[in-house]
Image (cartoon, rainbow, N blue to C red; front, side, top):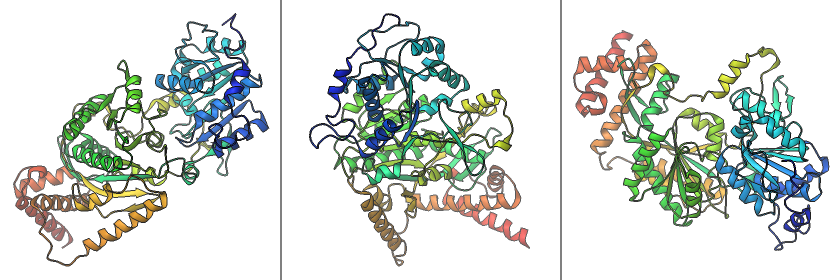
Length: 591
């Protein structure tokens, strides 16, 4: 650190890379102009010259470009002479360095906190939040020795653990300027985020206060992001619990929290029929989109590495092509993401590595095949698909028809803030805060007692509905049906209002077919069995609410009295006998 020059690139060089009219907009055609929100945010920043500035902008809006414009301006005006960029992942460090180089700023993404110095060719360094926590004191000394701008990308990660937040605060408290960026400022815990201002709201809660906000709804109106269609899939699930009870239920119906988590685990099991059916539908949707966007790509987000590998194999069988598989602990994972981004390959499968910040603009179809159900992770995942490259592009994300996920989908345009405890909530022990920060909400299978004991037996997929712009479209249909294809076949290039109009038209057509007079072709055996299983599961659910007897006990009693195999292998006659039997129970109990 000692002996480094104040800047690896002369301020005049940085100025030459900026708009001739900087900080105003350049004349059309001279350079790439700032977007309206970026220009407005930059104007606010320069008018206030703040030490701390929090920018909340929806994924795909251009936060990186805005931050680098601020950095170049501060370098050019000699307000700062060093830049430190903190990113969530190693891949993003490199991505930041490459973006900075395009505006004449040289960033070292390989800097290690133990090396102390870097080449004088660099204007700054890039690290991860974990890297900051490894040696915050060394970074503090570096920060003190230079007039430093710290860019905190996706700053909510500084609250992932109390130790990370403390490290960020210790390392960068002496910084001349701090610019915080996030697309999702809200968190599921109450760990305060360093250098973020909190203001008391009407309820007395402390709520994060952004200095500039640019939401998804605004970006959609400006045609900066794509409209997102959420394709929701339900279906019949059958599993065996730790206690040995066999449960059959429909995904998304009213259940206890534990049963809902088990139903989702069953749906996501690669050995069942739900995942192959949904991946096949997603691939058909991708084919439709590629008719107008030839390089459109798809991404499957899996719960863990074993499921990611299994999903990749399912896609290989379906498409005849091996998808790109990204596992974060394997060498070359970042290079595989970059290679996929620059190719026209159809599919990539990953666990968490591409859930946030990774720039693959051609992603247009996603499959949310993970058991993680926090609003933060969902928003980050959807953010991978919203970046628009040209007018009219749409995004389609396939999700399990689980009430919580569908609520997140309908609230996509809602603005959220990070809320700390209200004054009357009392003090929380620091250890409890740390445990809450490290916990992943509603991720099935994390209970020690249930590890290795849960067994998914069978699953089937049904197209449930499309969620778009807060509305729901579709009346439910079998996977592979004409009704499903009506929605999978929506054109890949549509304006937001055209999407809405076309969905309403499909809904009317679907309704007219469902009301058609008798005489249509009789349903297939496969469809009849699905309808009977659905009816039986509904009756079992009603009996459970009436008697408080567990679902599995009810199914086992029906098998004892009526005979036949488990519900997944039952014949039409078996199912009809059980339906009649449970109806008899209801009559006898009422009499």
